[in-house]
Amino acid sequence: MTCSKHELELIQTKWGFYQYRPLPSDEALQAYYAEQYFQQGLGSYAVSYTDEEKAWFRLRSWLLHEKVRLLRNGKTGGRFLDVGCGEGWLLNEFFDQGYAVQGLDFSIEGIRKIHPHLLSSFQQGNVYEELVRILAKREVYDVVAIINVIEHVKFPDRLLADLRQVMDENSILLVFAPNDFSLLHAYLEQEKIISKKWWLRYPDHLSYFNKESMGNLLEDMGLAVQCVVGDHPIDLHLLCEHSNYVEDSSKGPGTHCYRMRWDNFLAGLDRNKLLSIYETLGSMGVGRNLAYYAMLKK
Image 1 (spheres, helix red, strand yellow):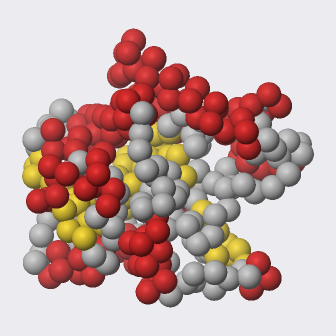
Image 2 (cartoon, rainbow, N blue to C red; image 1 turned 90 degrees about the vertical axis):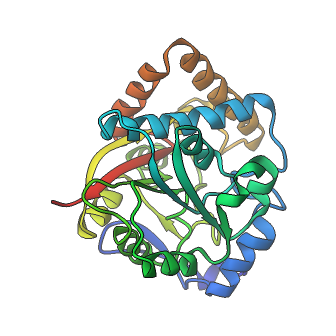
Image 3 (cartoon, rainbow, N blue to C red; image 1 turned 90 degrees about the horizontal axis):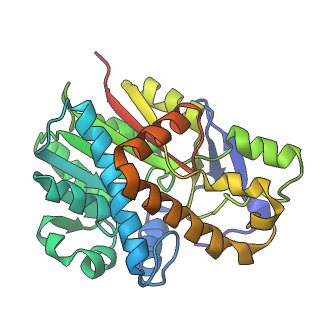
């Protein structure tokens, strides 16, 4: 799964997002996620979590579900599909909210360790092959989620085209992805506050989206974006030399801890107002990740 630096190239697609070339093989990607990602604590996944971290993961999942609930005019329940469900945090939130849930992922390790009670609603394997089986059954879901998935896949447009087929006019698609090559990133580079594009992570991330490019892609795939919601804008900490974790990686754990405690504290005061804050930031294209809520174009 390795490729020398001189062989790799970042190209800008017609939608505006950047993607690596050459793309890895399907076999190499499947092996990477099934055999390495969860077991070795790679990416945003860890071997174990503190109670504080677990509370933060549950909060993030609540915020994502709450916006879905509001877009559905307060309705909960129905059928929920989580493609690339990882450790099952969002799957569990929708399960608790009364949905019939179905999770797909390359690896079983994350969900087995964190949410073993959801194993009966989980299918391990190549998520694209599993999606083809779902399409063949002509199944339709009320809510479909891809959380930190689209940046990993080789052909984001094909994935979205498939997901459209499991939606009807009332379905909601939730796409959650890192906010890369953003206006903030451009400013940080322009002012020489950072010395490298730290967000580039081949072969983990193959594509890099921001608010504009993701909007272009979704629109072109026949999906109308209802709203964009941000999350904690941890990248803003790079504006201060005392919390610039790109130039000094030792500052990373403390900054992440601040992010969790900031979110957990404000949520303790009013979770709905915290969601409103992140809606405002998302509308400005600000947030380490952006959540896009989309429906089929009328």
